[in-house]
Image (cartoon, rainbow, N blue to C red; front, side, top):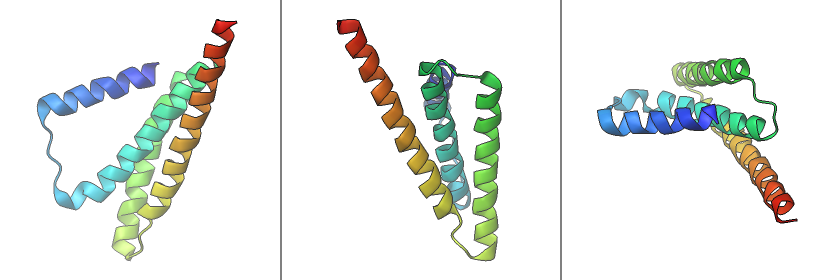
Length: 114
């Protein structure tokens, strides 16, 4: 739940302050945001599974985003699109976490009906 609230607060701050990112940083920020979303969906899944740990969430949130942006930067300097690997991995993890969240919520809804 903390991750979801952080996401909502971040979206509101982004809308209110109208933050502008230079085009040259867009690939790095997009991969970092994808990594952050992966952490948020992982936190939601962990919370629903009663296994949420704030220290794991915070370290994953910042660690994954910095690592993803750094790898994208390194790939850019080497002329290799390494960011695509991050997009594939984090995208897959987001969909996997979403599928697990969906199943947990469906099971909870079924158990409340009976």
